[in-house]
Length: 80
Image (tube, rainbow, N blue to C red; front, side, top):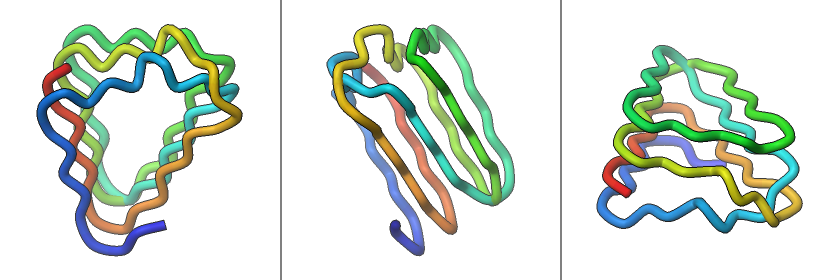
């Protein structure tokens, strides 16, 4: 749970995130673009501001119990 802005850029590798679920709670707009491979048990996005997942976000090898992101403002995951 975070309350303002999250910006994660360059080398964001979530491909070994052993998860059963990827849950993203945000609040306005969501843009999923270019090579989003989410072969997880569940991909849940509840929007409230803005999420941008771009360029090579690979979730195809989930191994974690859960990855949860609760944000109030914006999340940007970019490049790898």
